[in-house]
Length: 88
Image (tube, rainbow, N blue to C red; front, top):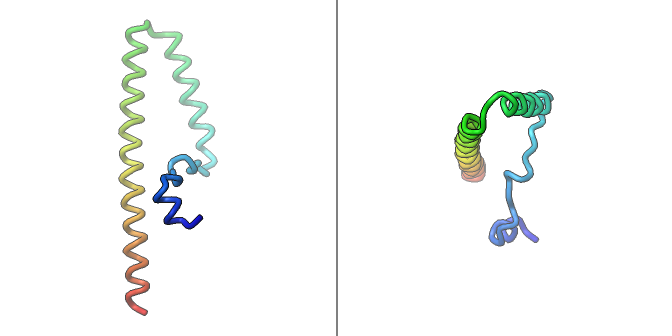
């Protein structure tokens, strides 16, 4: 199936296929899990819920930034292609 048909039918989900290639990603992800485990032991239920709310807010903000970066990158790519083909 063509890329345009895949896009039309909603079969393209870039966010599901992007895996960080930075060698520090796994280390950082493990540190996050370790920190959450630490705080789960230290905090009472109410405070832990607030910390989890903060974590969710940070994740949402990060997702919004990723979305805007994707849109910007896509638009920039299209503009580059227009310039390349326009100057032929």
